[in-house]
Length: 207
Image (cartoon, rainbow, N blue to C red; front, side, top):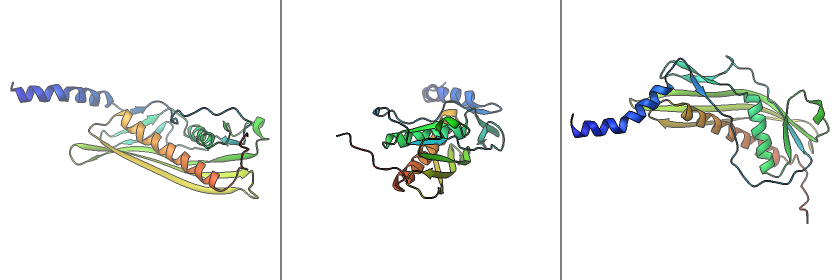
């Protein structure tokens, strides 16, 4: 065995093992979308409640397809709950005390602003591009309704976020990153539009 061939095998073996671990009848994504850890804000009375978004999957648990290996991509999480959590977190980062709640929770009816909506798309697909590259493509599309606060009537709008990344092999981590990144970007866009609409009264400075 030549020196060059041995060197290639040493470098390539870990990649082949990683690829082999991801091959099966289904590709599974684990974990939950989350926000970067930032400074903690003092507790305050909630100004907004973000209700779990409605979501109807085409196939339970399936969020996309690995076209390269001809198999579905599964995530056991709840897209409607995950999106609501992200929006509440982004609002909190912007200085608005917000909580997530189930849509049928009667204990939060006195909170001034209510945000609800539908997850129209929560998807990640993996496709081969050329001979050595695969592309992870994530997309999240939402319809949102905001009621209360300074609004005289409910505010409704939609947003779509997408993200992609190239890799050598199909891995759960690659699919997870682009899907969760798309979810975060969509939540950030919703929070920005809500704040820009002046839904919340300016908060006292505390001085």
